[in-house]
Image (cartoon, rainbow, N blue to C red):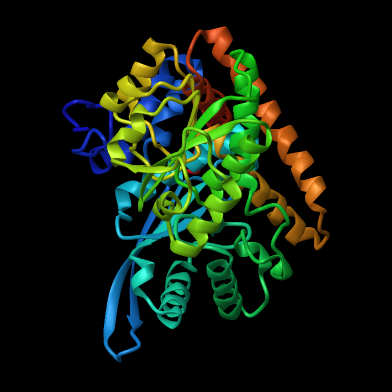
Length: 434
C-alpha cells in the first residue's frame, strides 16, 4: 500500500505491496479508526512500531565456514506492559512480516485483557538445513544480539513457526549466562522442568476450539456432525482438530506444505497426527487409508465443509478464494490468514470469521500464566490452566460479540475496537514523556 494511497501513513512504514502483512494490518487499523472517538487522536501510535532491531547473526558451521543470518526483533507497542510475542525461524521472515506480527500481538494481548504489549522476532533461515549444533549456535548468538532489548519485564519471546521448547531453553540459558543469574521468565513456552507451564503446547489450538464453539452456538451451528477443513496440522491446527473431532465433528480435509488430503468419511486424527510427526507432513496419510485422497492444493478451498480452520501462514485467503469457500464459520488459527478484500467477501456472503487476534490467543494467554508462575515460583495443574484459559477466552469473545452487535460491525473490527480502545487509553493516560 503506497504512501500516495494512504497519505496519513508514515512514509518509512508504508508498504508498496497491498497484500503484505504490514499493509493488511494498517488497513485493519484504518477500518477501526472511525469508531475510536476522542482516542483517534492517538491512532498513529498504532501505525509506528516503537522499536525495530535488525541484527547480524554469524554462525560457524560444522564444516568450518561462517554463514551470516539476518535476525529481527520488533516491539510494536509497550503502553500496557512488556512486549510479548514469538520467535520464528523461516526462509520468508522479513521486517515487514515481523512488524505486522508484533502489531497483531499488541491487539491480541489487549483483546483478551493481558498486561502485555506486542512484540515479535525471527531469523530468515530454513532450520531444516541446519544440524542440531548449528541450530543451537544460531539461536544462542541471536539471543545474545537481541539481549539488549529483551528481559522478564521488558520483552518476553515465545515459540512460533519452526521453534519449540528446546529453542526457548537455549534462549533462556543464553540470556541467563549473559545477565549472571537464572532468569526463567525471559521466555515462555519452555520445557516444564525449566519453568514452563502445563497446557502451553496445546493452548493455541484449545483457544481456537473454545472461541469456535462459542461462535458456532451463536449462529446455530451444531458441532456434532459438522464437517471441518484444516489448513496446517501443527500445534494449533492439530490440537483444534483433535478437540473438534472429540466434540463429534468430522475432519474432512487437511492441507499442509506437503499436500492436500481429503477424506469425506473423516480422518482418524490420532493417526493423521502420527503421520505428520513421522513423515513431516500429511501427504503420506492418503497412501494407507481407504477413502483418503491426495488432491491438488488449490482444490482445498472448494471442499464441502461447515467450518474452515486456516492454521498455517498469513495471507492464505485471497478475495478469489473467499468466493469459493463453502464454510459458514472461519476460525483463524494462523496470524493474518485473511486479506482485507476477502473479509469483505465473507461479510457479503454471510460467512462468520473469528479473527486471529482473539481466535488463536490461547497461546499467549497460557504464556501469561507461565510468566506469572515463574515470578511466583508456584505452578498450577493443567486442569487449573485449562479452566482459567477457557474462562478468559469465553469472556473475551462475549465482550467482542456484544461490541460487534452494538456497532453493527464484523468480529474483526469489533476485536480491534475493543483492543485499540484499551491500548490507546493506556497511551493517553501515560502521556508523552518530554
